[in-house]
Amino acid sequence: VQLQASGGGLVQAGGSLRLSCALSGGTFSTYSMGWFRQAPGKERAFVAAIRSADRNIFYANSVKGRFSLSRDNAKNTVFLQMNSLKPEDTAVYYCAATRTTYNAGSYYYPNNYDDWGQGTLVTVSS
Image 1 (cartoon, rainbow, N blue to C red):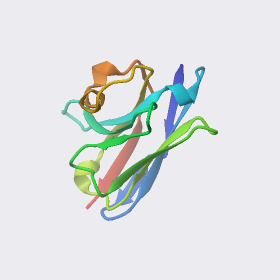
Image 2: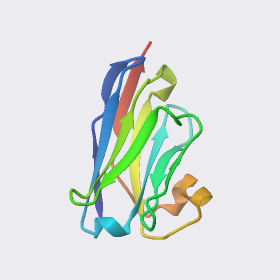
Image 3: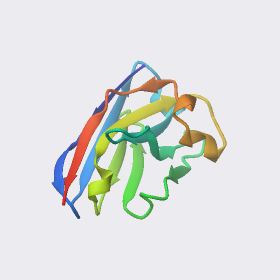
């Protein structure tokens, strides 16, 4: 399985970006998909995930109400719409995939994902 993330860039605070992550080499509809981010000097942190079995979506508290995750199974792609961006959202954003169905809390942990994309840099200026 390969994941290709795109859509990062430089944006002013309050602006928006939409990240995409395309999956190839597997049956996309069977994968739960997650987004993580890693700021310089910090650990990789959970952002959002969508569970394939029931399409339930989970968000980190820090992005609730600002970020929106969706998936298009016809395009083998998951999207992360990021609105009202803040400087503290600056990070490299990674998409990840797993075929294992977990309870909600387990999607927060990077080790529970099997495949990762290369990351896309989001920079939010103040």
